[in-house]
Length: 604
Image (cartoon, rainbow, N blue to C red; front, top):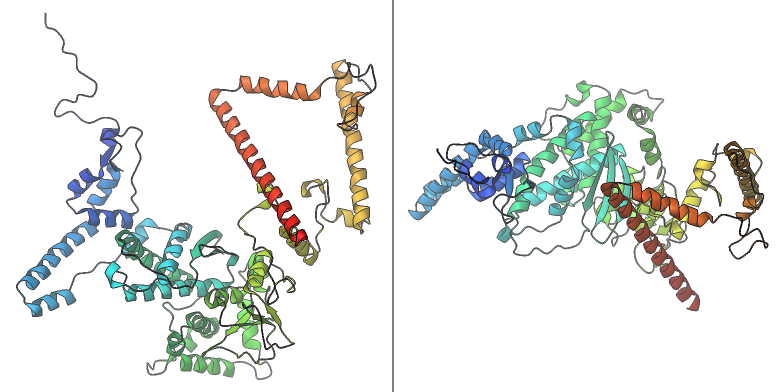
């Protein structure tokens, strides 16, 4: 009789297939060995193809390993870039060999003819639809704006050519958003300036650093530069599609004079003005310029002169009306509202304000803007200027025909979508708190005082009725219900709300009586008086013993329902209760801080 050999579960005979996580995942060292590439090349391939490490439930090789899915590694096996990187690696060996032999002529020839690669095919593979590209544009924009603000430094492989390219891409994106009025929210924080735009129904949020001098350390930026290599091509594709969607050529041809003066956004706005008008009247006008000796400024002037000849002589503004009518056809309600916010307003920026941010934000909401320096559209002495943005303690010379405000006024107007009073933002005064438009105060449970003021100003500007004390917006059947009833005074409105609450209490009492009668129980008249009595009052003798303890009944019911819950649902319920208590504690702490701050201001 042959004894059977017992084998352990983890033992796998040779030739038998792997099972479980060992068959589905491989470590990073195994993946590098299978692809026969170096670790930096493997990282670059994963960044380009969008492959990220996985977290298996059971790490069969230990917790100190990085795991990838087998299908992802097999996906890289068939990537043409792998062969291209191998070719580049062999070519670099030829350059090193020529340098070792001190053959400078051959080494320079090989460096000039070094093989290159493009990522166009990978962009089309990863984003087959344009809406997919817009969904993943947040990190790309933040990274491009960050690198555009960095100084060029050869020691960390940050080249000046890459900095200029990122700056150009970021300005092209901002020019499109500003021209099409797609900007929705702006918030200034310590990290930088947060922007949110809405393009084809997708909300895109990115962070732009402050325009300050950045310092680079001697850290390894290889991974960041690999991401930037992909993001540059990615944002170029997005800008190409967006510019062609409004009938503009890409890349844009800018005025070299304005580019030399670091006025790229203004140069792009002039490019938009010149080309959007020609595209509306057909391609025959834009194709009549074949001379390469004419610069961009002369081209735009010739185009405008030719278009004006084609218009009626008795209607000099017909071209502008034609452009505006054609642009307003496909605009939604938010875009039309943003377009008219700073309409017929002219702003002048002092030299100490953040110029690039305001040059981006103000035209996005319909305003005209200029600055102090060469290449500006109009000078400070222009009498048609309505607002001058100043960020200094005092302003020695003032024009009586304009308002002098701080930069925060522009951003608060953008977030509230109304023109705020300029008194609290005047020069030399401490401005009100800059509230984030990305925070829902009602959902958080704490509404700052200035947020209430902004809500009242917004409601007054839009002729809306705010919810009164004791009522929310959901309790108003009609937004203009109180006005229809003749409630115009605030005191009268409060009285009307109290009457309505009494009627609702009586209706509830009536429904409770009917419910008790249906159940066959006798309705005690003292039950209706319980809710009317205050917490300090005590009912008359003899009736207290007959009244049920509603608080105790509610606690017993909650405990009973908690016992009947499953373990998972009970854990979720306790976690939500814990989050609610923490939120209440945070709100209480904010209220205490606000009261202490108010007391300190009163004492001063």
